[in-house]
Amino acid sequence: MGGSSPAQTPPYDGPWELARPEDRDPSPGILEINLEARPAEIEYLPGKRTTVWTYNGTVPGPLLEARVGDQLIVHFKNHLPEPTTIHWHGLRLPAEMDGSPATQKPIPPEGSFEYRFPLLDAGLFWFHPHVRGDAQVEKGLYGVILVRGADEPALGEERVLVLDDVLLDEAGKLVEASPPNPAMSHAEGDKGKGPAAPAPEGKAAAMTGMDHSGMPGMSEEAMRRMSGREGNLVLVNGKPRPLVTLKAGERQRWRLVNTANARYFRLSLPGYSLHLVGVDGGLLEAPRPIEELLLARGERAVVVVTATAASKDAALVSLPYERGHGTGGGGPIELLRVRYLGGEATAPPLPETLRTISPLPSPVRTRTLRLSEAEGPDGPIFLINGEAYPKITPLKARLGETEDWEIINESEMDHPFHLHGFFFQVLERGGAAEPYRAWKDTVNIPAKQALRLRVSFQEHAGGWMYHCHILEHGEWGMMGELEVSP
Ligand code: C2O
Ligand code: CU
Picture 1 (spheres, helix red, strand yellow):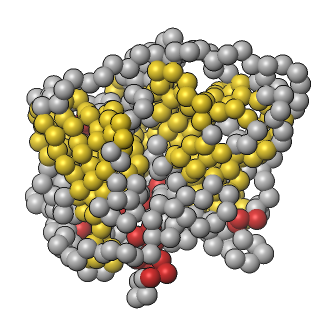
Picture 2 (picture 1 turned 60 degrees about the vertical axis):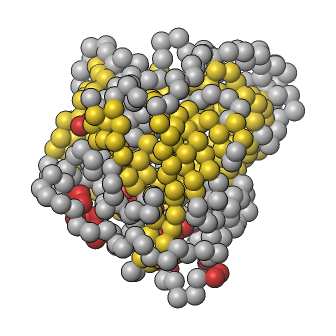
Picture 3 (picture 1 turned 135 degrees about the vertical axis):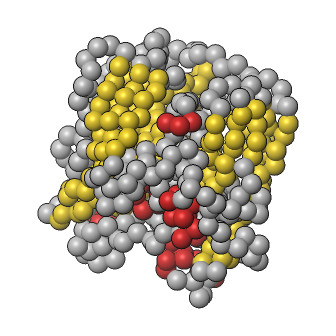
């Protein structure tokens, strides 16, 4: 890339807190907001205007803060030139509020919808469209919800870090999104009005041993679909390399979410002590010391960062990570500058326990889901048990049942697997028992590996989605539906 490459963008020195929406109902226990999806212009590169799609004018959208038990009411208006929905990633909620193609017709341009549901769990969640997710999220449509529990331990000053990347051209414009999968737009547009259009043929020859260098006839477009779209400018809360300061003995709780289309962040912060204290569905049972953290697309993590007398100026970086097909190139990428202010203090010890997470009951059945990739009529497609969405056979379960899902990734790439509406517990990865219990809704399944999870359908009957959260893979087949009947 030339001299004006986004990678050489100077660091951002201003404030980088997320926007807060106005609460229309001041009474406690209710967070009632207006949310508008609309195009806007912002400045990712100094002096260059980028047209983006936003919630309420900012990227990321506003930070919604609430407490467990609060009612969330969102008066949503679509001022985009195409249909959209809002999916509330990770939240347990009634299926008809979930904004997915299983339960909601897309909201047309200038249409509106009221999302209304109670917030049941503490944690960091996020929201994004579930219509042409690959294009709409890349354009800027995402925001986060922070739900606090009643008796959370004090773990230091809190920061929310939304990690994303964007693909910009030299003029600062977002590189045009990939054309939609025709099968998907039919599925979305026809929801409830008849059968879905046929999906690309799912029985194409499996592709093996491919990487970028070994895909001669593959267009840039097809390659982007294969790897997922990675950007050339990495952002924290919409800003390049913003700044945090810590003094000796200071402790901060960083709540992280990966909202990029496809990029994984393998986070490292040399010179500081790091503890993982929470993931998708809230706190772990105990803090876990970590050296680095792999945050797959869609996952969240809560990390306590402690400065010691040995700390120095440093950067939170993302180290190279190979997730298949030659995606691991490129040196460490700087996400956040950390300035060390010195001092003598030492931090008090972290609490030894954070909460209790009970194991789930024994499963009534075990399902096997096989993830694979294949060559479709015009590029790669992605399959679960040999089927490409929307031409799929929904899974069926009953309320109150517990199941084990054995997910076998037969493909050459990692896939971040996401289940809507329910948290699960990972039991085993690559044949090894998971060393600790945690509530997850998104989990990375490395290429050629198997993972076993347990999930209990205790509430919220209805239609739910599960899919790869590399949005291009979801849009091109790697998506399924689960019907939980009462
Ligand atoms: Cu974050 Cu079905 O998605
Ligand atoms: Cu995938």
